[in-house]
Length: 87
Image 1 (cartoon, helix red, strand yellow):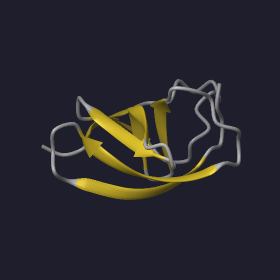
Image 2 (cartoon, rainbow, N blue to C red; image 1 turned 30 degrees about the vertical axis):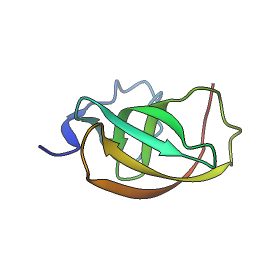
Image 3 (cartoon, rainbow, N blue to C red; image 1 turned 90 degrees about the horizontal axis):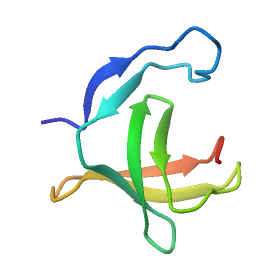
Image 4 (cartoon, one colour; image 1 turned 45 degrees about the vertical axis):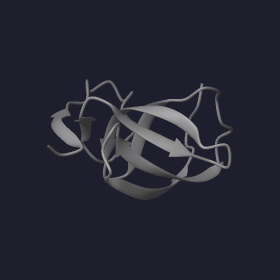
């Protein structure tokens, strides 16, 4: 089992600002990040970004380090993320 499954398509309206195709992650993919080890639920991944639900919005431009993982798996992928949009 990998971290990604099938790609999702852009709707062509311009709402999808990513330059790479989005992929749906495996069920239970999370990102632990920041000094408080916050937990984000990963919605989608691409070569250039991560879409996730986080406990509180982060200001655009904020850079955090963390790890992508599938819950209950020993495999972790270190990441450095810069917030592009948050709401």
